Image (cartoon, rainbow, N blue to C red; front, side, top):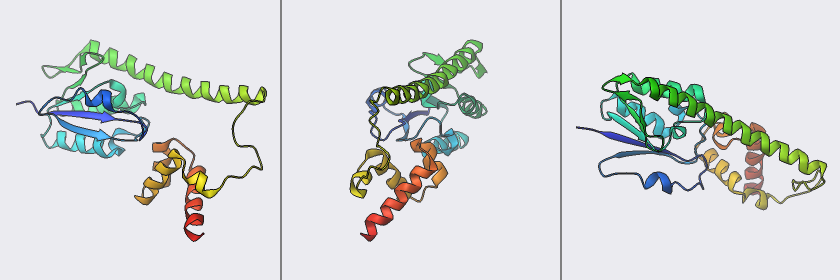
Amino acid sequence: MSNIGYYMRTSHYLQNIGTQIDKIEDGWKVYEDKGVSGRIPFLERPSGKRLIEDIANGKINQVIVLRIDRLGRDLEDILKTIKTIHSYNVPITSQNEGITTLIDGKESVMSNLLINILSSISEFQYHQTREKTLAGIERAKLDGKYKGRKIGSTESVETFLSKPKVQKIMTLLNEDIGIRKISRIVECSPNYIYKVKNAMTTNLSA
């Protein structure tokens, strides 16, 4: 009997997960991590950790993902996750790429090649997008079109706390998640999180 575990992940809590949900079939056990960055190690994600535990306990004997990048954005961690799952002789199937990592209990050379290529491209695109964003900001500054908050300008605590990103940080803080972990999940600096904490305190005492 095939016990299939279907893993889903969205990097932002507002991101549409519909394309991943549409692929679910009857009988599959779903593992979903919402608002979790692909840069977070797989075993540090709530559902990711639960999936590995169920595999270790023999509850899951096949893992399916929509795309390899749902496992992560960091090449080293993706490969580590795949090796961990393979250590239990459990294959991983990526629907969009049309590959299965184990065939009759043996790793496919072509699958390993594709996984390395796809993972490298995923990581490359992440850094490329980040560089383009930073370059765009610098260009906007030079052109005098930068829309960022000017030095010396003020913003009310209420306005700051109403921002979606800040709301996400507040939720994680209320769940007693550590600063460093929140920094990785939301992809912001620890200083920004401390700013949110101070704003929360100010708002409560107002």
